[in-house]
Image (cartoon, rainbow, N blue to C red):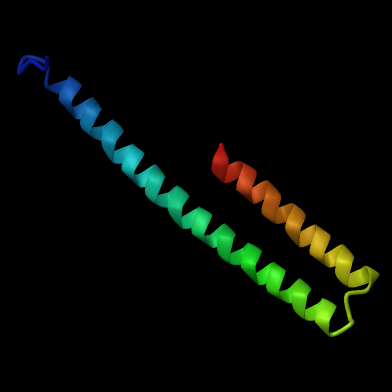
Length: 78
């Protein structure tokens, strides 16, 4: 039970809750950005495939972008 003799406990708890809310908001924004990037990459790959221009160089660029996206997802998850 919280005591009025220990207001620092309440301050620490409030700071923790504030930090948690900020972190969750940042994570949600980052996750939304990652989803948006993934959709963009997918659309570009589909367009290149349908246009017949998904050659080796385009595939290499797609792999590099998807690799960066995967690393960003891992860092957001941690």
